[in-house]
Structure formats: C-alpha cells, structure tokens
Image (cartoon, rainbow, N blue to C red; front, side, top):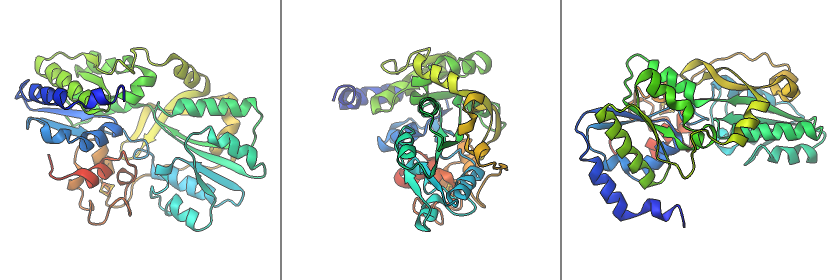
Length: 363
Ligand code: SF4
C-alpha cells in the first residue's frame, strides 16, 4: 500500500530509533496533542524504544474527552422528547452524563442513531419528516468543515427538521492555555497532523514566536512519529524553536483553503468550555446568524447551564498532562472502557482508554 508500507518499514524504523537515542541526554517533556497520536504511539510501541530522558505527555486532543458533561446531559434531555432522533458519532454513546449515557437512553427506548458523517443527517431528515433530527456536532477543525457543508446544504434545500447541538473546538487556543499553565513544563509539541491538514501549520507559529517552544507536524505511521520525534528532540536540544512540518505529503503551511472557506462561512469563533480545562477564549465555534435556525439550543429554547466532571475522575489533570491515567485511583479498579467514569476512558482516542489497552509500565 503506497504511503503506508513505506512508513512502516523495519529497516528505517531501526535507523530512526538509533538516531533518536543518540541526539541528546537532556531531560525533556514532549506533548503529543492529538488523541490519534496517543493511540498510535501505544499501538506501535514507540514509548518502549524512547530514550529514558524523553517524557511523553498526552494532551487534550480527543474531542469526546473535552466535551463538558453538561453537553451530554443536554443531549440526554433532548433524547427524552418523543419526536426527536439523536444522531451521533459512535464514540459519544458511552460518555457518562449525570443522568446516564446515550447507550442507556437507547436501551430505554429513545431513538438514538449512529452516523458516520453529518451528511447522513440530511437523508435522515428527509426520510423522517415528522421527526426532528438533532446531530451531536462535536469535534475539532477536522470535523467542523463537514458540519459547515451540511448546514449549508440543509439551508439550500429548505430542510426544517435538522438541528445541530454544537460543541466544536479549536486546537491552537487550548495549546496556548496549556503553555500558560503553572506547574506544566512542555519543551516541545508533536503537532496534530489531522487538524493541521485543515488549518495548516501556520496557526501554531505563535508557540515559537511568543513562547519559544518548538513543534513538529507529524503523521500517524511509526516512521512519521519517529521522524517527528527526531526533528523535535534535535530542535529542543539545539534551542531551535521553530515549527517544522514533517507531514508535507498531507499538510500545507496555509492548510486546506476550501475547508477553511466553509468554516468561515458557517461559523463564528466564540469562547468555549473544555472538560476539565475550563472556559478558553476563542476556542469554539457557533453558527453564524444566517444558520441560527439550525441551532438545537435556540430551537428547543434550552437554557444551557454549564458544569463539568464526574466525582473522583481526574480527566482534567490528565488532559492537561499533569498526571498519567495510572495515577488516577479509579483507573482499572472502577473505571474501564465498559464502565467509564470519565470521558477519557470512553473514546478510542482517550488517554485513559489508550493506557487501559496498551499500558505496561508508567514510562
Ligand atoms: Fe477519569 Fe477514569 Fe481516567 Fe480516572 S481512569 S481520570 S476516572 S476517565
């Protein structure tokens, strides 16, 4: 498979591992921001071949994990309305709210359906004219353009029974919040390849310019990540605080102009709440006025009250990289993927889920 086999080549992997182990003995904290990177790092055993001076920290890069509990509870409330179909990506099903989960609501008779794209909701709305479809529109810059395209199509086709419960998040502002965190030292970032495919590497240049922290955009195959780590560790050790792009086959400096145009047409940037991290300025998306009829909160006149967190859950500290999942007293004892206490254990990209599946030691 072109662009897959080359990036899993054993010989190259060995060379990169050896190189990585000889760059520097300086202690450094490297954060991988993206949940897909967290999973790939575990899946390919990257932690096992790292030199001991490199501490990998997992960041808040899983959209389900950072969605506040109050959002889940609002979705649960909507699912109780007799004429509503909740349409959602599968990994939202088990996220616990105060009143249970969508899986539980579905078992109790609510009409909750899994979709693979927001565009599936257009067909659902057409096929169910007497129902109101509510799409749980979450995700980073990677999924928001499809939500934008869908709402535009809905407006163009006069679809009046499709609504979006939006909680889209924007990644650069949360990274700025993290570098300002007391007690958290990040020496370099592995930048999120999928998000950068949409917005480009340019929006991350503030890390270098304002905070003197280097970053490297990288992909998700073993060679991508080892190459990215080589570049980043070398940058940290040489105090070269540049933002580099090691994923040029996918990511352009300026991003994807067409996707960015859709985002600009459909959404305004707003302040947004991140689970465990609080309210972060300019880190969310809200429909522009011309699309507000599709906003579920406005249509159902919901007075949205924000709150967060399950008792005992340490997702907030995990999403900030301050502790690792085995440091949470509930990890594996009470909290597991079948019975998640917090959102970090639910999504396949969640840090706790990754540690549950792959973790052997606490490195
Ligand atoms: Fe929360 Fe469970 Fe992770 Fe602990 S192990 S932080 S309870 S999700």
